[in-house]
Amino acid sequence: MSRDYDVVIIGAGMVGASLACALAPSGLRIAIIEAVTLKNDYQPSYDDRGLTLSPSSRRILEHIGVWQNVLPAINPIKKIHISEQGRFGFTHMDAAQTNNNDLGYVVVARSLGQALHKQMLSFENISLICPAELKSFKQSEEAMSIEISCSGRSELITSGLLVGADGSQSLVRRLAAINVKEHDFKQTAIVANVTTQKPNQATAYERFTHHGPVALLPIDKNRSVLVFTVATENAAQYMSIADTQFIDAVETEFGRRLGKIKQIGQRRSYPIMFIEAVEQYQQQLILLGNAAHSIHPNSAQGFNLGLRDVAGLAECVFAAIEKGLDIDDISILENYISLRLPDQQRVMRFTNRLASSFYNKNPLLIPARNLAMLMIDTLPIVKETFIKQAMGIAGLQPRAVRGQQA
Ligand SMILES: Cc1cc2nc3c(=O)[nH]c(=O)nc-3n(C[C@H](O)[C@H](O)[C@H](O)COP(=O)(O)OP(=O)(O)OC[C@H]3O[C@@H](n4cnc5c(N)ncnc54)[C@H](O)[C@@H]3O)c2cc1C
Image (tube, protein in one colour):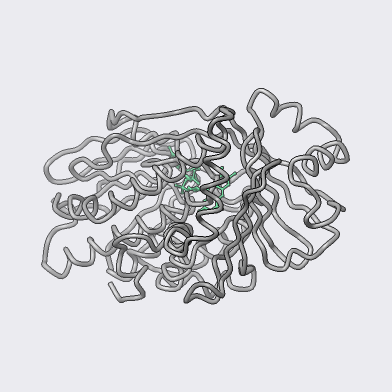
């Protein structure tokens, strides 16, 4: 049977668009279906959120030809400062302690989106179908039949592989009847750009408070992205108070390391949930990115992890093509899972532990947390592990992360 496409990706968010770019050089016929017009301000993946990219993400973005497009909007992180409100423990990481020039990078999601889409649209074998929505699909031996709704019309397309990169509420996942493990952290992240009195000196700050973490990520000399996590029951109030009151609240939690917050941009809020798909693949179907695992943003790992998954899947697809296998060969997805599951589980454990340990008000845990921070700062081996985790280079990684050709 001839198929319309080899691969159909649902969702042109950061993960879906990255996968399309990563697979395009194979010559496979790829369709990417996106519900929201790419230039729309409400495009969920590409708002004004500052994203921290790890050095491993840089390597992957270089590999898929996107880094060059986004470079003018990238700001390096040279130092990371982690502290806990009202406690003596804190830790410091410096790029000078690693083999890399930078510990990571900050980019506004909108700029990354533009760079990804520019690259994606440059390939003739990628068809963007947008605005269009997935409605249903049916698996058969020859192909996956996918029903989409495009400008009010229903269309049927066929593909060898269906990729669900459609975010944490994935319809692909629900239609495939894949269950999830989920946990509501009852926290909401409020994100806004801020201008501070003192320059940030390319330092990313993360401070754990009893509400949850507060992070300031450098976007240029005196500007940083604020990620202020509050209990969800108080989020509406924090979103509605005047800028001056909100700045007072942030300064109470964060202190004045960067002097006064002189200006603050529009606030956006994101409720935080942990969602993990209990299975990630079926015949001719795979879940990627937030559809497979949505994690707490406390250590800025979500997209970085999704991008390593993209590199892993592309590596398995290229290896299968070299062996002459068809794209619907289940061994591609089996190999992908064995390659990627250990890293996914490590990151999920790490972020969940971080969330529960710092949010826990049990006074008995406080000395342990202080000790943990001191240990990270004083024991080189602990610190190295922590840095590797944050940089996305812990454990066995896809070739693109290791700087090798697929
Ligand atoms: C406050 C906050 C801060 C964060 N900071 C960082 C950070 O610093 N570093 C980091 O690595 N990660 C960070 N993350 C995580 C990161 O944002 C996510 O991991 C990433 O956005 C996941 O991308 P995705 O493409 O999987 O999903 P999404 O961004 O949700 O994209 C899904 C896409 O699918 C489309 N779609 C959905 N349903 C359909 C359908 N039926 N038909 C067609 N299209 C559909 C949507 O329109 C959307 O474009 C942060 C998250 C939050 C909430």
